[in-house]
Every structure is written in C-alpha cells, then in structure tokens.
Image 1 (tube, rainbow, N blue to C red):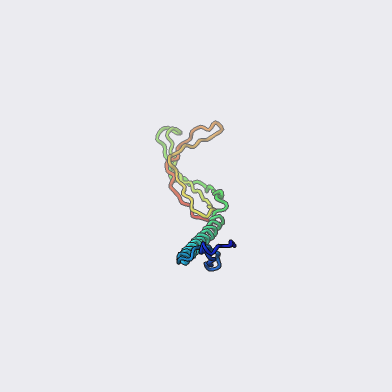
Image 2 (cartoon, rainbow, N blue to C red; image 1 turned 90 degrees about the vertical axis):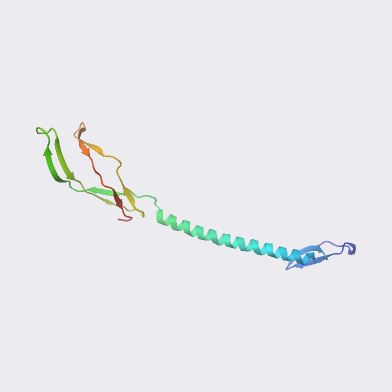
Length: 148
C-alpha cells in the first residue's frame, strides 16, 4: 500500500474486506455503506437475470423438442367416390350433371392442428389431352387435429 504522511491525515480503512483510502472525517463509513449497497444491488440483479436466462434456455429447449421437425408431410388417401345423383339438361352428353361425394382421409403427424380451406372452385380434366370435364363447386373446410 501507499506510505502516507501524517500531514495528509489519511489512513487505511477497510470496508468489509476491501481496501479503501479515505479521509478520516466520517465520510468513509458512508462510502462503505454505498459500496456495500451497490455490490448488493448488482449481485441481486445479476442473480435474477441469470435465473431468467436459465428459464428462457429451458423453455427454448422445450420448444425445440416440441416442434422439431417443424413440419412433416400430411398423408392423404382418396376413398372411392359415391354418385349421389345424375341428370341431363339436353341431348345425351350435352349438359350432363353428376353429383358425387369424394371423401379424403388425411393423417396429420405434426404436433399442431392444420386447417384446410379452399378459396375458390376449380376445374377437373380427363384424357390425354386434358379436356375440361367439369367443375368442383364445393369443398368444405376441414381441421386436422395434431397427431390425428
């Protein structure tokens, strides 16, 4: 430590194990109290932040385990179509209408539900030349539950 002259009236004061040089006027005890408070506040803050980051890390590991892989393909199988009604609006093949129901069974291996919607009707085609054969007019909305 420093060698101090008696004229400077400085002495070595210990604040709970920490060496501090201060004047002998009573301010040293206030400085020690302030330093103790700062160390206590910093330690408590760092301890709380450390615990928060540990909890955040555990939660991140849980989410990673839950959603890895992020997406698995949904497996769908078409059932045989069922003809509900058939009628003609004109001679033979002109204006023929068929109402049939087609059931699709899907398996969702993901850990979250998937909603299937159709925003518009679509056409279907037949033959090598892909000639337009009709329209699909109503596709109901469906929700596939997780794992089901």
